[in-house]
Image 1 (tube, each protein chain N blue to C red):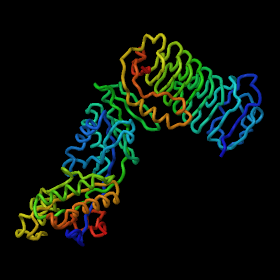
Image 2 (tube, each protein chain N blue to C red):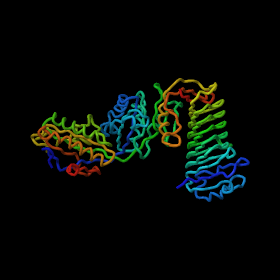
Image 3 (cartoon, helix red, strand yellow):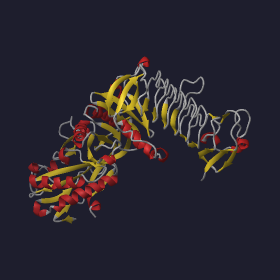
Image 4 (cartoon, chains in turn blue, purple):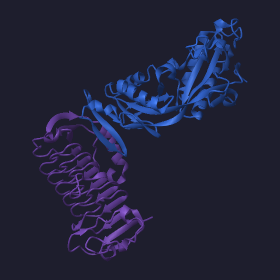
Length: 297
Length: 246
């Protein structure tokens, strides 16, 4: 398959089951909602070292939020319900409760998982509960007035680790293609690209020569190792970047991959974009397989 | 389905406890044969039409009808006029709409119980008598007119909104919960302490929710606005509040 002179490999991305939630952060204005959301989703690139993968899904206009203020929708993904609950509580407690003027609400229906259920005790007995429309909210007195938060949010089964690789003639060309892809993918609902700027350069393979490590650099796609290992790269490829996608459903991941690959390919071979590939483990580890050719048909 | 309508044939000669008339208690029974305390059957006192027992209307009511919607758990019960005391007593859920005045103890506790209404919405379009919402534990009470003495006394939690004047000693021994008042009580009880004017976000959520109910939306003034907060009852821990629209 070839799009605008860019070769689409006949391969697939392998993804895993995760637990996810969406939470809505509002504030006096979008600036402070962003401060809270960026803080909450900071250091959340990979479950391997961060406990969860999190990112900003989109901005919310005042008519989309429970309290008629501007807000941000954030998605969090973790490997288990227990870990997700732990990460939500820790991150909301440190990053949203602390942020001036912020409030937090559930953005998803599903199995209940604590949002501010335990954080309310920060109120030292002065916290107040209000049940509105069948949902319980907590009002916690803080120095700027009150922190308002919904007691719980909904958790669903989701998909983590959808991905594709952009192979280009050089780093600048690969980055330009990825930026175009991320720009298009950020318009898709229900997905986040958790790595910095949505792009990751340290793709990994399973295993390592060091016994303590379960994963190591994806040597087959490292341009400097061409000749030293069984490389996937031709002599023309100067850099490879990966975009990893977590989504609330398989369709969300598929839509994001389609939008991203199309945007990357729209720059064309003339702009140095050579190939689109994907990361997998032979199909043995993850239950979700996203075949590039099927997605781009 | 048309609502189940109970029309009182003639004014009651004595107080009539109609706590049997709730959506949950009339589900699956012969409505006319339902006996009231004292032995009279609904069919003897009311003309009964319609079939939707989740939506009941009491037509042509008077002040001698007591315990309207007492203990109700679901559905909608509308009283097209005034009713007597104990409306919504110990209510658990659903919506009770009273288009006129109520007597004392609306949404209060059943005798001997430590908790008043524990859920649902009571909307009183007229005035409420004394001790409205006494010992209230959860839910929402809206009083469009005036409230009598001791409104929200011994309240444990929940929200009472009064758009008219309140009588003496509102929130007496209130432990938790919110009294939302359109007018400052005169005098403010000595055990409520002024904590200044605030904009509270939960009022926006509350107003949005109330406006979704069409029967409330029409008369509800904007409640998402700054309020003066009085903490109290300081004689009972001071973790409750009286909010007066600024």
